Length: 269
Image (cartoon, rainbow, N blue to C red; front, side, top):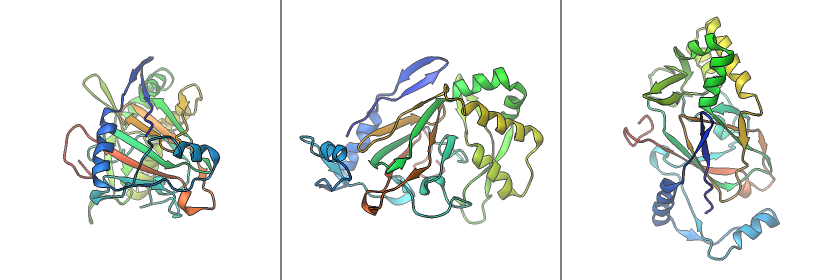
């Protein structure tokens, strides 16, 4: 498997993450799952990829607690209780599981099949987002340090609160912590049955404005066999709307992992 080194932009400097943990994941997956021969692919480029000498395929299956998660279009309509990752809709810049009790520290994606069209990935430094907010929208930035409702997407125990209440930005020592997902905040207030205050409405608009700047992000299409591994506090990521081909066996399908440096080995950490 090809594992590119993605970078983290922090105040203008680049730091490389070398994917050591990803290698450990594959080593364990190899022990758990049977290796099988390559399957028919859609085009010459993918066929050539599968013909590489010594290339093996790992058959990965979901396991309890969804520790390995399928990212694919299930045909369901995006809405309450339906994650965007199970649809083909555009996903604005966000961090994964922003509503969580303990937000994952890292997110990894392995591409089994890309989409026929669309599904492009973009990445931005949340330090840079913060700096631009401070320069252009200081009042709105202050509101993002105050708690707000996040839709928990019905992924909680029966009878538990449907929203979490936490700030968008915070710090852990010198490290930025960000629960970035303006969409989940807007949905959170709908689910909670309350109106957003004017300051929060303006703050979310400001976030959307800042992250819409093309000079903020880099674009890196995720191709078959490639891996993305990101710091889930410092990097925001985006996915464009996509369209699958006619063959359901080769529709867009990614495997996702969340990692935490501390906490329990369960959904809420």
